[in-house]
Amino acid sequence: RGQRHRDCLKIMAEKIVAVKGMNDILPGDSAHWEWLEGKVRSLMARYAYRNIRTPIVEPTALFVRGLGEVTDIVEKEMYSFTDRLNGEQLTLRPESTAGVVRAVAEHSLLYDGGKRLYYMGPMFRHERPQRGRYRQFHQIGAEALGFGGPEVDAELILLAHALWKSLGLQDVALELNSLGQPAERQAHRAALIAHWELHADCLDEEAQRRLHTNPLRLLDTKNPAMQSAAESAPKLIDFLGEASLAHFNAVRRILDANGVPYQLNPRLVRGMDYYNLTVFEFTTTQLGAQGTLCGGGRYDYLIEQIGGKPAPAVGWALGVERVLDILGAQQLLPGKPALDAYAVVTDVAMLPQVAHTLERLRDLGVSVQMHAATGAGEAMGSMKSQFKKADASGAAFALIFGTDELARGCVTVKSLRDGQGQQVEHELAHVATWAGTLQSTT
Ligand code: ATP
Ligand code: MG
Image (cartoon, rainbow, N blue to C red; front, side, top):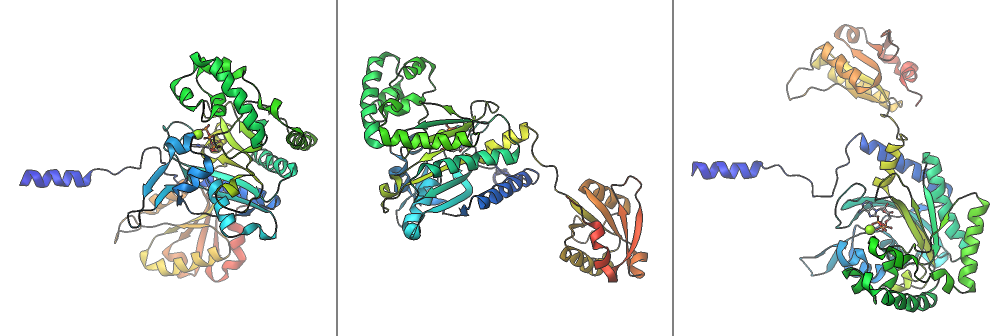
């Protein structure tokens, strides 16, 4: 019995760790996330895009119908489950465009004209975890719904381009293609199947399976044996009609006029079935195999595909982990956030008075970290150990709430950054007159 009890305790004490491929974002890193999100928010505001927040769980059918049955995501990457209460088929969202489109249709958001929207949040795909590829990852996306003209395709590309610029990112290239309209793709598809059939001997198992269901996807192959056949395959651009070409050229002219460089890539097809006309990706050579930072395009048929009133739309999504990764590699991430002051407290009896002063300082916009005891009922620690903590905190000043000072109604403010540790005594009764001297300019 004793042994069994011990075994039991051992099992109970087994450390529980995060799910594979799903990461904690810890302080330090999270500061970078908030910084990036802040940059995005202010940029979105300048382009008149407004925030939308949709559920993380959606009906599975939304993705099966929206993304297409023969796609990597729907075939093998979705976290799907049955709701145990009512048997509904549900899925953790693998991307957000389908959810945004569902919300827009469900709430008839387009009744008074097009909408420009953006979102940020976690997505879930059951992939093999590696650098730049996780099972819970985060996207920031922008979608413009109810606009059919090339100027909105271009606007979204300019928006992403402006984001890289505002972050200072180097080595981001834009690849551009047009997928045309469904009838044009149909004609191209027939030619493509004929081409692949001529090169049947080089097709791998997956390619053979997809040859008739999704021959376009074969162009996106990572299998070297199929590369040369992929390169010589008929190009969709040669099947585009006048209207599609005009749309494409109009997008290009706006990009040209704004000095946005791009590479035409006739093999760029994207992973979801819902795209038509313009598609694009921003890539970098600095992240190894996971070099795509952002991808998007036009999806004029998605809304009706999931049961909404037909309306054109275009959008993109970027991978936050990958963008932060390259920002780090290019040393563009901000340093530790500034802390104005660290409060050193020698006597626990003084805590109510100290806390009151700190609250007033915070009201006045000063950031203050208060020293705190490690355990319940423990002393605050020596002055020496508290000063060590104050130094490590990165604060510009230490506020010394000593017994003598407090008795005089004062606090000593010591500079931690001027190299000399200059000290000034201030009266607590007149916090507002000196609070400003603590505030950093950053
Ligand atoms: P990839 O070809 O790398 O699998 P994708 O075409 O599946 O990308 P999208 O669905 O277009 O990617 O998603 C947009 C962006 O989201 C990608 O360009 C990438 O930056 C990011 N992303 C996609 N999947 C992951 C993932 N599993 N982990 C981290 N980021 C991802
Ligand atoms: Mg993928």
